[in-house]
Length: 133
Image (cartoon, rainbow, N blue to C red):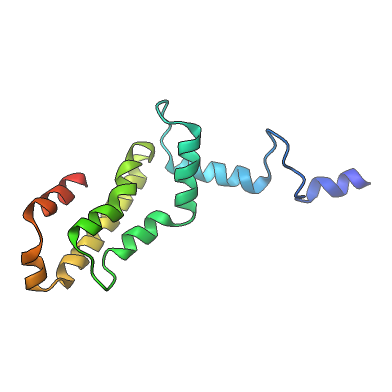
């Protein structure tokens, strides 16, 4: 009787090694949808990137690009650095989707800049930002 009740319940006592709750398995399956396996990357690195992704970290960084107050291009480059650093572990389709969103955000950013602000930006920074994408 007690066993049947425990099986359907998600208890906080499922911390034994190797056991995963249904939610953890579902999260792991979803992660497999956007991660590209790589032998050169540690499991902990993947977990950290997965956590950042699950907390909408990449989405938040991309959204911040075009929000006021507008940042300078060096700051925009810094915002994009996490996405650029993990591109090797993301599946191509996921990376392409993020790049499309970055391009849209950058277009909105440039359109929102005043002529004076745009002239003040370093051409090398603009070229570097374009190259990194």
